[in-house]
Image: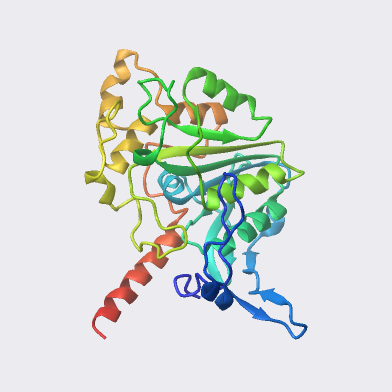
Length: 325
């Protein structure tokens, strides 16, 4: 199945952490295309996307820790994650949308693509949480740094901060990172949309969840459209954002990859200052506080999203072929 051609197979919901009137942005003609009348004259919506997990699902232990690596931020973190053992495929209407594996430490790692129709986001998040029932959840995603509006009292030294949103009872490690200045609140009037918002919402509402945290890594890469079409190029290799914005401050770099390296403590400036008693890199502090033994920021080539890159290559090949038909 091709998500690009099926992106309007159902009414488009909005998964944003904001107040909403619930009104649809579709006009009458578009709405009519998404609905049909049943034999009783009642409006019936298109079928809900089918989300399935295939593989050794029985090995997943409920009540543990789950880490969701989502979108660009997830792909960058996944570069330093060694994938081994049997993995579980997550599919939406037959198309792979994610991968789940259990690390040697016992943590459940969930690699998820954001190149999905909006109508599938809540069913996907709900299905995964129904199967895992984690007591603790950490969702790693991105926020667009150039368009983020910082609070008036934001410290001048944090021009590219790590941001977070948490459940009413956050983990003690998150509170500690905040007090140390490694994390900052994601503040209004900024909004979050898409899969990270859906995951956090479902997690907070889950009866099995004790603490939920959404970690947001800054990026200067232009955001993808919420409902497609989605780029067939990996954000790891794309450099479209490099000439659009200069992060300034601690990095002075507009390249998304260079910005991530500075946050992870592997960039040139951070490495040069390491011996001068410099403060710990934000992601290094997060790694230690949250016990991310499964992530090595000095390594590259992790295969957690290899399935997604394979699909991107196939799509690029199809697009090239169509140009000569």
